[in-house]
Image (cartoon, rainbow over all chains, first blue to last red; front, side):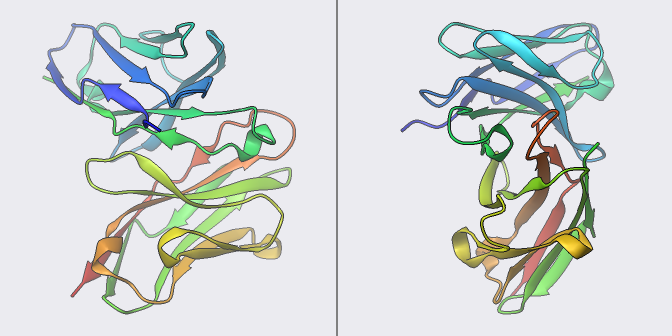
Length: 117
Length: 115
């Protein structure tokens, strides 16, 4: 069973540009969550998509957006990049159909490391 | 609101020594608790989870954790550290009932294993 695939793995952008990151979940997983990981803040929840709908959203500005396609693949976009957006962006998928939602295990991808210059 | 506190951003042990990584949580309802591990240049992977079935939970790679409601703790232990255990460890909590089930992660503890 293939794992969660994130592309690209590494990218460098300059301030003001925008970036799109892609995530392919485990086959059959309908929920996709995105996290931002930085040394100072740890893992911060961005948003969660289920069946093409954003179901939960973290406390990030509107420059951060995402979407999910009918095949459960997800993308996130960051517009008008700032230096502080440099981070590892992690995607995780889960299957909410298995047991109680709170007990769902997240399967993470290796992440997309974004550097903003 | 739920939150997680991991005591110590870095823990250093010798190979063969006991590993103890501390996690305290706050939750207004019975929680689900998780430990994840992140190796360099990789995403997080599940070590173990507590879902109220048993207070002592065994995970992969010889790790285990004990849920102590009276202490609101879920500390991770391993009797004998191995060099391959060097990684970042994250404790996470999500609500068992009501509200958002999105897990909240601690800031992580970096485990350093000396030969």
